[in-house]
Image (cartoon, rainbow, N blue to C red; front, side, top):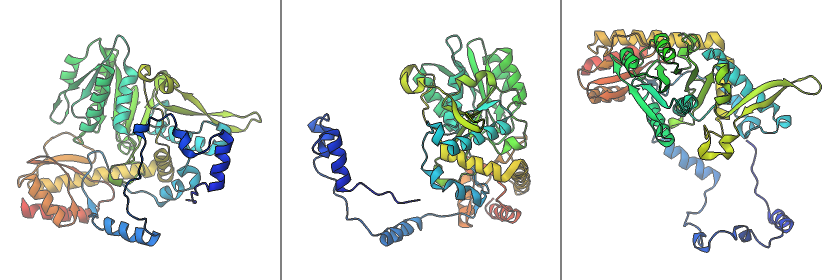
Length: 437
């Protein structure tokens, strides 16, 4: 990145003279005296660049970095082509904000347009927005899209990610609407329970595919039940699995959402991540945020514009259907470069390798006495019983330099395998667990 230089004294004086005030303090004349900070915080003296680098390296040295990662549960360590960080580090993308002036923002607008196009190809949907904050808020926004005066109740699978459910509950509470959990049975959504819960007050049904336990849901049957009651069907999907499983569109979904982190974003201690949203054409005007479209300029050349942006999000506040007014443009750019670099076959291969290695690991763990907790088909995550206790198993793996799965209970662990984990690493993990099992 280039340097960011502050204004010098002459620059400041010229600006103050231009607006007709004597000092910078006068800019805050409307702020009550009691709220003004009189003394600056007692901060230590600044350090040189070399000293800062040494201090940061010392702090970074406290982190434990694992070569083998068997933890997923919503954030996944996938291979990221080098070109992703190379492209998004360019200043024109790294420092860009919302492209309101199309005539000087063609590059940014095109990058968002390409992102929307690829999300539509991945999900099978007709239209995608320019992204939202994360997968959980995307699910909550999708539920809000479906509510109206007659239908305000949303049914959400209890097998969805707990964080997604928590965010959806917060949105529902703030909107004064009802959110009901559909019980899970044997690790998947109980469709008989859904059939008994759904009624003419139900605005939408949401399931996660694959679900929090890694299992593959019967999405088509869920969609049929939703449509029979004229409720909307929302699918929250893992974008890598979407290259292998049936798309949300093929399952009859009205809206597809998900966490875009697997599409070229490192784990980064939890963010920033990316919420993607796509929908059938009939719901386009209810999508929150922005949609970039393609058109032609006066000379007939290809051009890009903000085709749709819900302005009530900016001005109506509490009356707005959504308060999403920004997007994760840089993360969306990373996803665009990742999908373009990997291509359809590359993403599909990442999905196939993740699934095949996960199934191999599950089989080997079973031989070692770590039986699967659920019998259903899965993608690249699964839950096993832990005869020796979850804490002991995870501690043993940690001693071997392996980050184990997510502890669900004293005797259950949720494991994850991606294409980055080798067979040798999986065999090592199994041998470690045999010792403590």
